[in-house]
Length: 393
Ligand code: SDX
Image 1 (cartoon, rainbow, N blue to C red):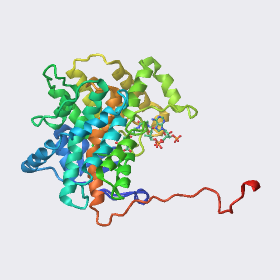
Image 2: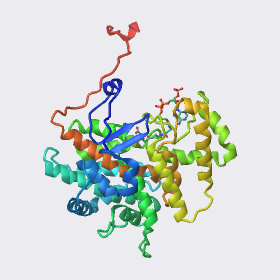
Image 3: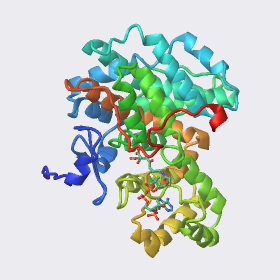
């Protein structure tokens, strides 16, 4: 049943654009992708089906799904010359630095074949972007480990392919764990889009000038890297490790309330959600599924996270400020259990959010009334005045 949504006039007056892709009701904790609730998609769908939905507005038929899968699968390899960009980075370079550089470089490989005004070339660019991100991300991880790059395979689904490209080594067969691949696929769905967040707005603004879509996605990756945004999953896990044990939670709760202390509870709070982030509930469930599949009985950081959540949700300060766990609160524990190092967490976020970014970019580019973005400002500088010679200053 489709519930009619009414918007607060105040909200629409600050809206940066119109979009049909994602709907968030921050007060009710509702997140819909093309009208479908995020928890239903995470539980029943898979990455490429939700990617198709975000791009095209409807869930695919069997034939549409088959064509989409084939198109994505056959764009997963990267140009052999693209590998040279990795060797220019120090081995200890943050993988997000590599992602910004290599994805930006894709525009040099496809600039001439991407007439963004041509629907077919736009579609190819979109499929290339979605298909190559896992390969580029896995290569960033392999480069940091010193292990050889692993080629994508056409007989594996999107997320299994990514897991294998990250963790397989030539010396032995890599055995995929379907429970872990399914959990990561669910996590990717949760991260796929989120309306006009900082990085999506960056992609839209960059794209509004007609810039190459690959360069626009690189701009989105740069914005996502910030600890207040996509970098929060890495920051949240570092925070849980710093807290270390349940008995130290009150100390950090006090610091989070202290206006003179820059410390914030990472993975808590949100610009839009003033209720529980619906993605955090699914993430917490995925966290338990992964730990159970790995037979991890007593993950101390999960104990700290759940106790911190319990205390914060009862604390009048956080209740009054409507601070709830967001998607990043449980994701770090889960991603580390899946075998990823903390500096790869935001890379995984970028891999999934590429679908939202490119879907929002396309919606903007295909808008017949689309104009270059040009935010205005409130000027608070000096009034007009005459030039002073240096002797008179
Ligand atoms: C993501 O936009 C998106 O959709 C982003 C995202 C996506 O999918 O793209 O959802 C992904 O970025 C999730 C958010 C990840 N970031 C973190 O978890 C970092 C920790 N969170 C905070 O940095 C913070 O909550 C923000 C940046 C997310 C929001 O900060 P705001 O805009 O200040 O939030 P607010 O205005 O609602 O804050 C209300 C009050 C403020 O205090 P006062 O100025 O009213 O006294 O709560 C305080 C804030 O200082 N506050 C916190 C807090 N978050 C807000 N206090 C302690 N700990 C926190 N985490």
